[in-house]
Image (tube, rainbow, N blue to C red; front, side, top):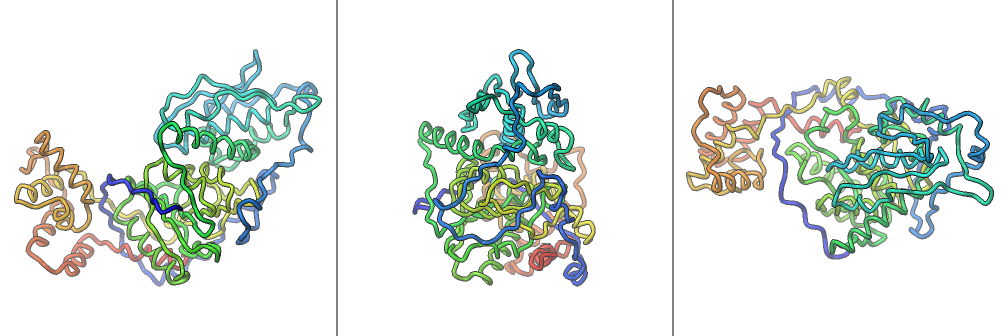
Length: 479
């Protein structure tokens, strides 16, 4: 990346995390499960990639051209009508007159989910041998510059279609396929990698020009790693999970600078701990690498994944990372799709085999989701405002709350308090404080009287049955 580094966003989501004490010895020796061996599915669309560390120059990388000629027929030669009611779950439908594939858009801040059904609809239109169109985008983001209509692909003699693959898409597109979240499906989008690559980059670049944004520029010795860790992905959502630390061994030897990309708005105290431990592990195996935190806006982070010469995704389940890296012409290392699927989308796209700590695996290891103490509760805000009224500033208050509250969040509370007077330092009437909130409040008061930070943190860890280092040790040994 050039010398101008994207600034991280200030706003962070507030979470306080603890985890049950576990038998470390059990954790370090009990995991001996392959990735369920689902990567070797017998269907053609579940092609298993055997990845290697490539060190080719970007302009030497083969851009995927799917050899589909064996499945191609002239659309006019199809005798039986092609139907697929399953597509409707992804708001994808077949229009009869004139024939086309249509789609009903739904755009949210979760770009990955929006792009999933869009690219699935585009892939379905390609296999169906028909045009694609819909009413139009309703978003100010770069996504609005993706095509709203695409003509069918004509050869010299006829319009090509792929009826066998289209029927396979409808009948067997993956063990957990959900057309609304089509990043869990295969059989459509994976056949249009070139369109995804070209049109994503074109849309990003057009939006950037009109919005005075800068496309990131990297040197060939630089790499981006993406981490999706957040409250809702730590041993909670069945499709998400952190990857074992040995995933960093995929980093090519030519890489000397690593940009650590994550969503600062979603990060948590526990996620920050994991990133620190990952950094320690990486420095132990690659002391030559310079590590730079690079959390920016959602557009900036997406663009980094598109334009970096090398990308390593260290968290399974991110559709955001999937669609960004499918538009990358460099080398990408990424966990398999949910269910273990690894469709062949090009020689530069490597599905990794490093174990993922999914909730199902965590359950086998007796590792459960770190317990959340509701730091957004009125009780904790009252404690923070009380400190403010006693002359404390946001950074001091964050420290006093045992590093469990980001100073940007404290600052937001104080700003709102000064603007509206909404938060009352007095205990709300008619509401009982939970035992843990009372306990945390007492610990904070004790913290005020103690200058020994280390001792206080140990006390908090003990009282809340918290041991984040346990999961760190699990990941450090890849289970």
